[in-house]
Image (tube, rainbow, N blue to C red; front, top):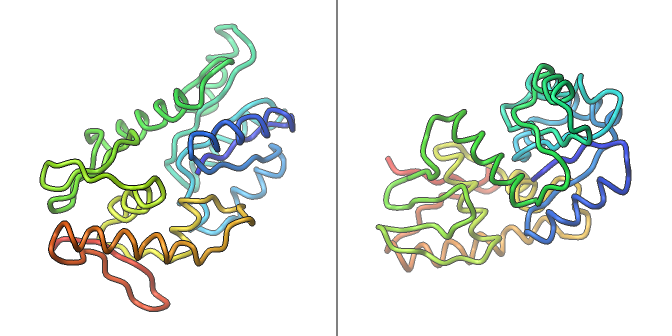
Amino acid sequence: MIVVVDERELVKEGYTSLFGREGIPSTGFDPAEFGEWVNTAADGDIAAVEAFLLGQGEQTMDLPRAIRDRTQAPVIAVSDQPSLEATLALFDCGVDDVVRKPVHPREILARAAAIRRRLRAISNYTEIGPIRVFNDGRDPEIEGEVFPLPRRERRILEYLVLNRGRRVSKSQIFNAIYGIFDEEVEENVVESHISKLRKKLRKKLGFDPVDSKRFLGYCIDWS
């Protein structure tokens, strides 16, 4: 999920709509509201955020350090001022990257993925056993062969692999896939997506690599 922070309602709505067209859940905050949220939100909600997009607001310069106290997710600033001084000020306050409008959401996603790769010092994919998942939206591979999946199932597999060895709840998966403020979709839809994903993995691998425990959640690992 992408969190957009801007005091202008039209800007927030515009970006959330654009990310939605790319199949990426997002939500918008006023800077003042966001400052309170980032300090008090549950760890699971914070973990569901893939990147923060900071726009205009009097408190914008204070937000990167508040974010960094909770997460290492990329912080990207959108600058309306084409000046070196404004750009340097944004970097000085702790953002990871600065882009100027207009900017396509795919570029923002690509920049966020590049920042995550640098932070983790890894390539653009993660492997667990014979499964390889990518950070750039490509279908995963199993034993070197492309394993086509619908977008929701692909993102669930990516989330499970990213959290390999750690059990994640249905709510955490839902937040990562649909966004923490999506009230139009029932959380139970996750169970349907996971059931379909597990059947496909079982058919391809000969066994089900996803372990589930009632009330505890899901886990994928290769020991």
